[in-house]
Image 1 (cartoon, rainbow, N blue to C red):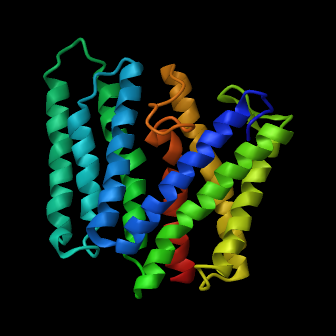
Image 2: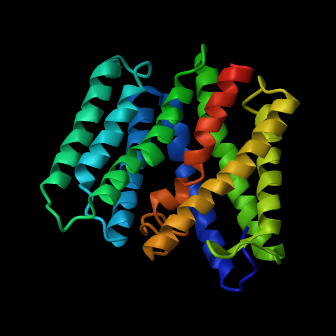
Length: 284
């Protein structure tokens, strides 16, 4: 999706190296399941929520970050009950998530007339809806299978398809991109890169079927690839639009070559729920 630029190769190398470092962490946490996988998802969610609320601050909104982050984390815990007996209290976690939001709203009330109250309330709630709710579907994927190897396979699918989509979109856009995709949102993204991202996601669907996801049919591999290829890039554009509105380039610099956790997982926020629903209704 990226237009040609002679300064890009080093950035692409950093992106690839960062991904290579993350792969063993993901595989290990996925293999262990239970608290290890929950800890990985909570870490990603917490950092992404912090970056999201930092972005709202750049827009001039005084959002109570702590209570928004806690609400999102407890929402994730509410959907992780089958991963470990210690976590099997969904009603308690869900209620705690709601209380955290209420406390955040009370803090907003106490800030007086100088605050843009309605936009701040919307921003507080948006963190849970935009970040935590989709990431919770990652936990649902890991606990959905009736057999352990199937659950592990389900959790790998979003990463495999989304990573191929992002990598192909970036590489093809950088080398072949000529026609702008959404110049007012992200000037470097191109139509050629977008098509490359869809093709990469479909290729990942085929490779997944041949390796760790034999339960997929060829039609499933194509359908999932197209869905991830389209909506993953929509997720990227949505985050780009928010960053442009807030006047920032990256949500943070925590991941070399990618920026922040939200920059790295913006596509996941759109693809994980889609993959979960597809598997639930058409495959599982």
